[in-house]
Image (cartoon, rainbow, N blue to C red; front, side, top):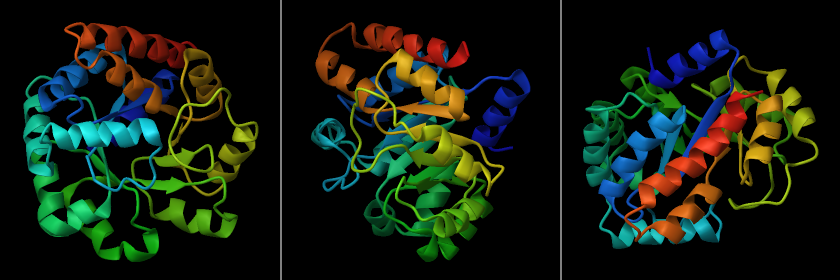
Length: 266
């Protein structure tokens, strides 16, 4: 069974919510990415999203744009990232999702990229700029490789389109809780419960909520309403601050564990 599907099933049996963390791959370098992945697994992270560095990350706010830039500067490419994931797999079975823009897949060739990702130990892809209407061949190749094709739903998605999107997804639905790009926010969206309920009416897939969650209190509030909570920019911001420190992994583990504990103690 796919590791993402398996993890959500286990969490449901245990009456727990999923804690998902996003970091920019190769920020500050790929060995740090490997070490952080292993540390996060121990700290209570259920799913790791790795942002594949790209020169034009349209969905990302400044914090994650700078992480992508640092990833590119450290020489991170999709093949090198897949080698790193193969290395992570020797010590950890944490589910891994690549957060990626379609240009990077198209350059390699869709069939080859998906096959290579599956071989390396990737569990799912979240392709930011590939709408479901253009995804027939992509979905077929993903299913054949045993990978989850994860789709995004936004606050502005009309309900009829939302229904079409969620019926085509696999693994989980990623609900973007705010309009605009990624980034830290001071409070959780006020209409979160209503929006999650609207999505639930059309799918049995787990719903993970992201964009803007930056502290344990917010993570807990989101996890109460959804099946999972995604924290990205707040973690990436910590990497930006401590990336050159020998204490990077320790400091990030402690921060991430505080968020994981909040999600798990509902």
